[in-house]
Structures are given as structure tokens and as C-alpha cells.
Length: 365
Ligand code: HBI
Image (cartoon, rainbow, N blue to C red):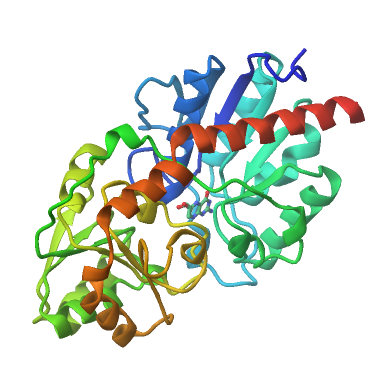
């Protein structure tokens, strides 16, 4: 019986269709999927990931699916219609899931896309949907709400701040996030530099961190996937005297080594960031987080204790916080990550969510 709280589950996990796992195109949700998959395997569950061709995940079997990727939803306007390319990888992934569904107890979906939500009633097994961003388009809001109503408890989010961007906030299950802390080393003695991590795209507002670096003269190391090359070139042009260095998109082992040596990370989203995985990665290395008081970051950063929350869109706010970094004890940062954002802690929340969904699915059958 899959409704037994100790039973081992067969879990099929469907990745984001915007890019291959490991490419960085899928942002923080790529990391979330990898961590959930590895944690469930550790617990003895049977896990398979279905993802676009080219995806690689350590210790987890991946079914690679060919096809055209989906356009990232955050680049679209509110009235954007639903669009699928010819030979859609999203369509192909869900066709695969349909064919193998009898081998599984539950599907875990992390795509921020209309099709999987729409397909929910067409499947014979329950689907747990992790919604990875706040409200972006009317069409998505409406289909997510429909699933929240007809399949109560199956819509998961990272944070309540994120949930509140939807009209059905109270029907969302908050899961937070978590990382494998053994992969992140505490660094007690940082160098001089600050760091900025993330997809390089307008909604992340890297330019504000660069402006703060220019004003303070403190070097800023930039890590992440260059999603929008034009946007990056514009920043380099506008802040030609800023002491910045683009390091690249690094794997976790290298990333944590580099970020650990920094005095703080700056997190400057223009949009309601659903969570902020980069913040917990930094905390795990003992690195304080200076962030705009907006979105998921407000639920992560302990103001004055593990970093600073500053007025959104205020470069002066960032500069003032940088000047006060001596007040932060780096051990408190690592400790917060250990208590709140360990992989087992996230695994507990996620596994209970899956089990609750299985129980209610059984009852309505
Ligand atoms: N856009 N269409 C679409 N589908 C996704 O799954 C998606 C996206 N944009 C960004 C995204 N996922 C992830 O990078 C999140 O981590 C934000």
C-alpha cells in the first residue's frame, strides 16, 4: 500500500522543459530537482528523472527526451498565450510519462508550464506540482488555480511570499528548499571581494550590485549562466569602471570554494524571487547575504544576524549594508543553513507532501 507512511515509493520526476539539467538555464529549480531526487533515493525510494536531452544527474537515472525547449515564462507579458513549439520537448516528456505511469505511484512536476497542469486529470496517478516562480501570466494563474481547486494539496511552492502573488495562496503547500550541506565548506576567513550569483537576466538586476561595487570600490565576483548576452554587454558598458569580474557558471564544488572566500553575496532581484537557492548556498559557506526585502529572501535572511535586508531597488541600501558587514558572525550563517536548509529537512517536507497527496488520491478513487 503506497498510503502506508513507511512504504517505499516509485517516483517519476519531470524536469523543466526550458533546458537540460546542468545547463543552468533552469536556474534554482534544477538544483531543487537534483536534491529532491538524491534525497529520495537515499531514503530507499525508486526515482527516475525525465528531462531534456543532454541532462546529467549524479547517482540518479535520467531518461533523456529530445525536442524543442520551451521559452522561459519570465520573459513573457501577462497576456501571453500558451505556446508550444513543433516537436515540443515538454509534450514529448509528458507523452513518455503517460506511457510508463503504471510503473509509478506519483509524478513530481517542476515545470512552470500550462501543459502538465492541464494534463493532471488525464493521468491515472497523482501529480505533485512544484510551482517555481510567482504569478507571471493570466493563463498560468488560471490553470494552476484550477488544479489547486480540483486536486487539493497538489500545488507546492517554495515560500509563502511567493504563494501570496497568487489569489489562491492559502491552497499552496510551502516546501522551502534544502541543499546537501556536506558539499559546502564553511570558510571563516574571507577575502575582500563580494559576490553575485544567478542567471544573468534583467529580472535579477545584476546592475544594482555592479553599481554598489563601483561606489564602494570593493571587487565583485559574478557567477552564473549568461542567459541574456545583450543585457550583460549593456551592464559592462554602463559601468565600465566598476571592479567586476565574470567568473563563469561553475559546478557546486568549485562554486562553493569561490563563494566561500567572499565577504558577502548581494541578491538584488527586481521581481518577486520565489526562493533564492543562492542565498542558502552562500549561508552554507558562512557567507552573509545582503538582499532586497522582497520575495523569498525576506523569509531566508535574518536581518542583522545572517545578513541584511535592504529597501528594494536601493543601491544606497546595498552600500550601507556592505559597510556594516563586520557585525555579522559567519558561524551564525552556516548554523542557519544547517538548521533550516539541510537536505534531510527539505526531504521530510517533500516526502510528507507526496504521502499526503497519495492518501487523498486513494480516498477520492
Ligand atoms: N519557464 N516556461 C517555463 N517553464 C519552466 O519550467 C521555467 C521557466 N522559467 C524559469 C524556470 N522554469 C526556472 O528557472 C525557475 O527556477 C525559475
